[in-house]
Length: 302
Image (tube, rainbow, N blue to C red; front, side):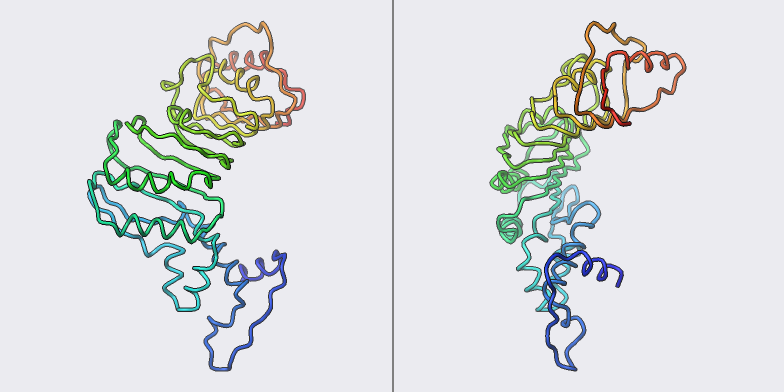
């Protein structure tokens, strides 16, 4: 009931009650517009995104126990409403089938039908590979799944790529609508994303090209940057390289005991928030303090 009250209060469109007979089940008495909002709320709050496949290392099957598929199994009316609500099909987790070398036509067709039901809605994708090895080879089965997703890349709006550190794929992603991306540093060069505003790099420092600069393409609209870790000099170059940066988060900073001398400070007129870890060692505390001599942040709020 609390969810219903919140949806009714936040709805910008009038919701009309439907006429029902006294014997009609309560489940059919909800207005279609309200039912659609409930479905969207369920899908958007699903942990780990709605997952289309259930995968073991050597097995793969459809996952009918997660939304929105589970909603289509309640009754004929709910199935029709779910099928006609594009937004519930625009958010999806795809777990790649590990060492499954091949499968029939049903699973690719199932994924294509899922994406078709999202019509032209922007897509939020969580692409996961749970292979235990670092060096991952794309099987024919993986390639079929990736090619289907790639055919819709111009609709990608938010993408999380949980992949092994290295893989042998030779793919490029044309993603003009992409706004938010989470991936490893080696995969950044695969994306054409001129409108990206939020970026999270999950790779550790050993995979950056240089401790003094981040291996990030120039994204003129980048406003929010999250790094798993970085050198002090990389932090300074990020602030300089992205003039519209508003927030930066770094989980771990390196070389605090070797902060370079400040020849020219890194200036930002737009940075509002900078979240950094406190040094755990006393010998790094002075380096942490000295780091701020490299930064000119007159508008920083935190």
